[in-house]
Image 1 (cartoon, one colour):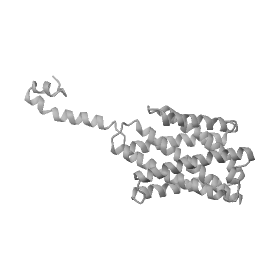
Image 2 (image 1 turned 90 degrees about the vertical axis):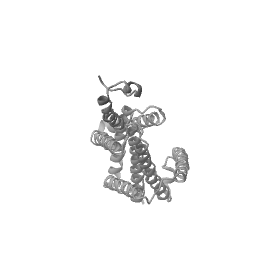
Image 3 (image 1 turned 180 degrees about the vertical axis):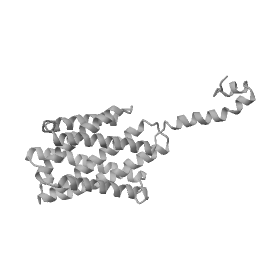
Image 4 (image 1 turned 30 degrees about the vertical axis):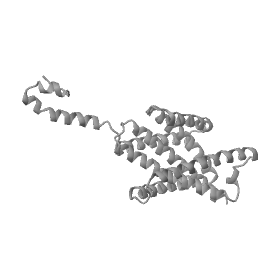
Amino acid sequence: MSNSHNPVMNRMLPADIQKNQAEIDAQFDSIVSSQKMTVGGTAIKIAGLFVLLLTGAMIAWNVDAVKGLMIPAVFVALGLAMWISFSKKVRPGAVIAYALVEGVFVGTISYFFEQQYPGIVMNAVLGTLTTAGAMFTAYSMGWIRVTSRFSKVMTFALIGYAGFGLVNLIVGMFTNSAGIYSSQYGWVAGLIGVGLAAFTLNLDFEDISQGAAQGLPREFEWRAAFGLLVTMVWLYLEILRLLAIFNRD
């Protein structure tokens, strides 16, 4: 006869069988806890997503036919990102698809920038990794604390930057230019974008840390990994644009 997790049933069992209940409960708790979100599990998913992103980027970089898919890739990636972000259910398949499609866009736009400014892509990659490393160090050492006030300030800053980006896009469409990025103050706007993207990484680090601390279900590792991937791509693109502005001037 096997033990039950029902205490009433356990009292009906012989004493020697009841004695093993603690061991069974420990094994049961171990199985349950192994299904919870962890920092290590999230890191593995982040690494996997970056491999997919780089795969899509390399294909786009080397295959001319794929380069023509840059604009469709933007809209598909945006649609997937919205679906992932606003869906109540965690969707690993959509996250994987996003990484591949976003990789096509990143690879294509990187190729075009590289043709215009040789060496810029490697500098942008190094700048992205260095900045992300600095932010992670600052977060892990406690130099940057993600408090409720920090989160509110960042939220309003991101909303403001998104509004600025929309207005600048509309102006650029009517003037056939890059908007403010075509002016002598373009580097200022570019530097602000890099700064916002860099500090947003701290929000992603906090999400991962708090998710693991609260014991969220393991599936939330996908959502946390997705958030960090989005921010890293944003940071890379902002650095790429800023370097292009400096090279242009």
